[in-house]
Length: 306
Image (cartoon, rainbow, N blue to C red; front, side, top):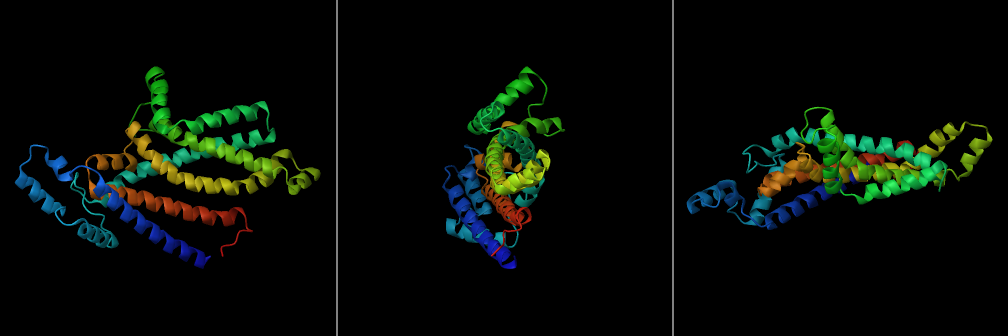
């Protein structure tokens, strides 16, 4: 276990270093001058040059990169060009909102997918199985930028049941969480269904039924537990997808999270803020993947970390 954790931590450091390098390179390739955006088109050349020196943008890109990495090793993500505040403080003020939205979306997807997948697997090719298969296909096919506006039109504008945007109360969580978790729910339903169908054909299930165990116990205690290992893997991978999808969903619903903050930072060419946001998303992604690997051992004691 210790050697496994050490290898994963070393790999995580390499991944994060690669993320830092790629993000720094790509953000400097994006057209547009952040100084010109901040001061406006009518700014004097002397003011532009003075601000560029103040922000350190007059230095070569390689020198800026070395300085950024040195600051990063000290825990300093820099100062936002747009807000004039430390990047770490801005991100920490928005990060909880994104975690709440992603966690609720994950919870919604799992609570909907697991029962649906189990029910579909009990009667393959039945009317319920065919209905769920068609529904999940629709859920996978609809991207967030389509399902989000559709949900706003139906449930906010036409029916008036739910608020359009913001994060003022529980009702504001419903549309963003459902929009973000719909595709995840569709994927998990198919995974649970396929895993359950495979497990129900195993000998230990036939033995459990022959012993006279209730069908609910056979399904939930035996078959479902063994079919959850690939589902846990998908959940871990999809959590990173939720963070990426949150960028679109948060923009649609004006959700005050790190995804919307990333879009705002890109539009204003706020290099330190963009780099900080993407670095935090990458750290969250690799951390969740590590926890997913560790969860395998709890679900299946036969798994050993070599």
